[in-house]
Image (cartoon, rainbow, N blue to C red; front, side, top):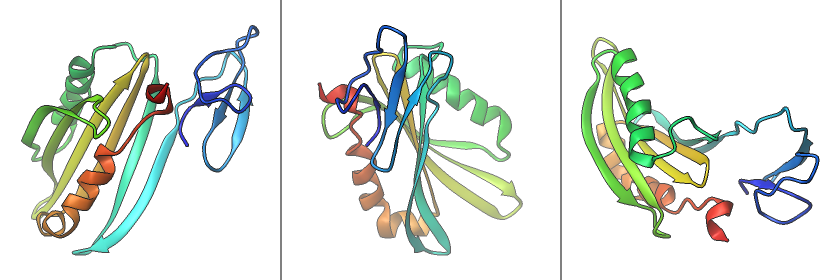
Length: 163
């Protein structure tokens, strides 16, 4: 589903001319050496408490910061500085179901008075690729479907980690 491949194999090796193929469950595309895969995926879930739930995944190849916790904290610092009414609710090192190290971060913010948005981020890093998973919810909707969303996020396994 996610990953860079050569031919039909799921690996990150580049050919001698530095081309590679991006492949997921919907398409495949050959890229030249001057192109960078900055994939973004959005998975729409059920509507609950007036919120259409989703899980968004951003993939960053060769991030400048290559240590998981430092990468997560750098991303979080940007949120703290740019979201009004920002409040941290949870910040912890964690694991995916497959045992990959992850960093979990939950926060709330207030884009306009009396409108609170809760978000959970899950950071995962393998080799030189960072994965940022994000979901948005309300206090009520998390009580209703939070366990399902958490289970989905923790089931994330990058192809590169499956070798």
